[in-house]
Length: 177
Image 1 (spheres, rainbow, N blue to C red):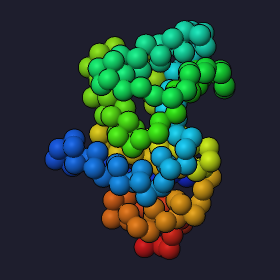
Image 2 (cartoon, helix red, strand yellow):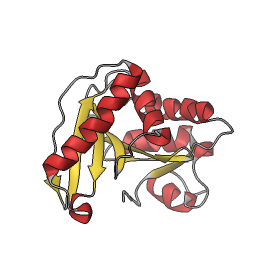
Image 3 (cartoon, rainbow, N blue to C red):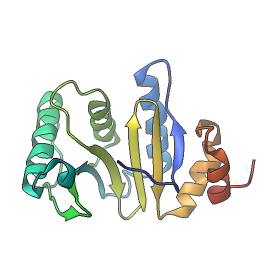
Image 4 (tube, rainbow, N blue to C red):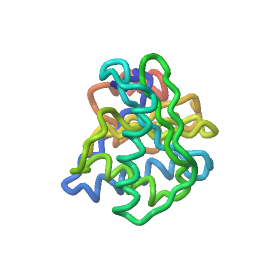
């Protein structure tokens, strides 16, 4: 569902999921997402495709997230909001204030064995101008309007970039390789 040709595409694949999460934590810290103070989990539910109302999408994401919170005994700030944009249910989850919460939620999203959310989860910070999309335990796309941060990530984590579209990323964020 989510696809952005302007993304930096990082490989997370490691022998153990915990190692992938360490790499992901490094990228989150490098992008200063938690420090921005407005990092949210954003659930993208295909309302139009599945015939859901925005209220149903909100309830579905809220139930999924509540089970995660109960299982991990964490509390998060902020309510859910569910505007419908471009025929998608965009459900804005709580504000995430600790990197541990972000990693737990990403881990739950990637390996959750309960009722699946029929959509995707991205993590977005408006003030940081960054969107992080962990599409599975093998990779993460990072995109946004903050070109300096994206260029820094490109340079400092160049060896983690996926090989298949390095040329496109080089044209956008760095020097040709």
